[in-house]
Image (tube, rainbow, N blue to C red):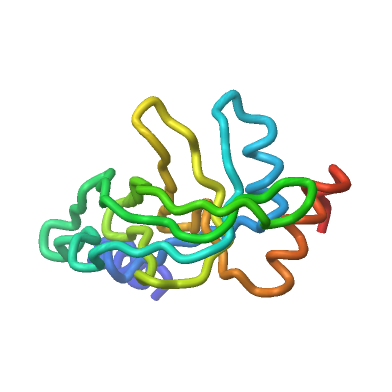
Length: 156
């Protein structure tokens, strides 16, 4: 019986297998950005984009694009030691990554705390199937980002 169960699991279609990952926290994102050689700006505000351009995995072939870049706009404020006080209203590339049939995503107009990378061509916000660099702009997440900036203490 165990052999039959094992064989059924081995030959089950891929969608039956679930992606297992832990969503990063604001503290992890802040620490990763601080350690990176890339330049990041922490923003609070809304990201608007055409949701119809989000990648749609092909369940029959079990494929999806590895990377999709969607033009977007972020309107809000950037973080400094004084808090989220400097106005920010600029184009941002929303970089959506996929793993097999699982892709990052989001909703246009969501209020976010986002770790946006400054690139040679502008700004980029990356999201993947296990989260990314964008978080709900809850009071807790906003407070955590401010604490990381002002105290340098980024532990939960």
